Amino acid sequence: MPTLELTNPAALPADWRDLVALTKPRVMSLVVFSGLCGLLAAPELPPFVLGFTAILCIALGAGACGALNQWYEADLDAKMRRTARRPLPAGRMDRQSALHFGVGLAFFSVLLMGLATNWFAAALLAVSILFYVLVYTVWLKPRTAQNIVIGGAAGAFPPLIGWVAATGHFAALPLLLFAIIFLWTPPHFWALSLFIRSDYAAAGIPMLPVVAGVPNTRRQIFLYSLPMAAAAVAPWPLGLAGPVYGFAAAVLSFVFVVLAARVLANRGSEPAHMDAEKHLFAYSVFYLFALFAVLVADRWLAQ
Amino acid sequence: MAGAVKFEEEVVRRQRERARIMALLLGAFVVLLFFITIAKTGINW
Image (cartoon, rainbow over all chains, first blue to last red; front, side):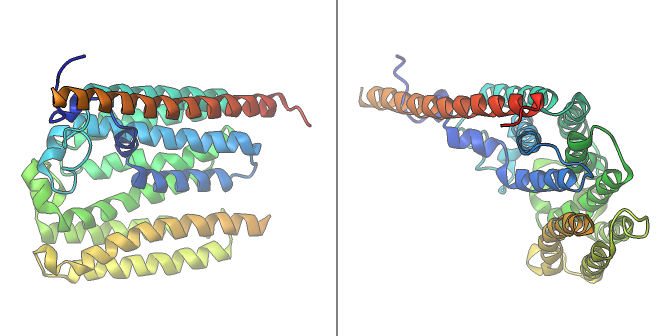
């Protein structure tokens, strides 16, 4: 047994709590919820255990993305106050363990999805993991201010995967759900990045507020909220959802656009004067939860 | 010397904890596979 001191915790086997933290459980909750809604909104439901397994696989795939993201960005995370206490930058775990954990989780989730539901859903899950890790984390995030626009597609996959796991094929509604999350991601992340932009600047990540400035980012947030609202309401006039969803989506989206307009009108440039941005960020999380919950409720009411 | 003993104790504690969690997860996985098989083969109880 080596006589190492406890001053180097990374030399120890990783604590299971740190392995859980690698999976970004809070991000995972929204991913799981949207995947579950995609599955529950499908016209035919699989047996309970297969539906449960599909959602479990989506959760594990999201966990793999979180672990691989933290493995790749450990150096950047160390430079940002928000992320400096994560297991890798805090030195509680070695990088290789995080890599093995992430890759293992990714393979396991895809294989289990294929065996339990169908290989189309498994392929979509694999594409979403690869897209998040390779296209977003490795390629876009450190290079372009549009990182979150294109990278947002990775987070938009879960409802599509949930639907395909249940039915085995695409349809218009899950593609619209994909579009809603895709268009929701930029205003959601840019609202956050406005009031923590000094963190991103310190880490050298070219988020929009760092590269294009605060007023331009506020304009982009507002502009993106408009097609997002249109996509959110669209299932109703297209006959893919009922009036309950249509009314709720219209009200929820109207509030979103109003909050985005408040962000546009805000002139504060310090985080202390960015209440409008903080409100929009908090509301955006509630918005997606509420919108998807109402969609499922509406589909079940119609049956 | 005290540091080495503490290190060993911590390694053993973490290994035990992880082994216990791994055993639980493997048990849950076996149960899950059983029910997946039942659902896929369409057996009604």
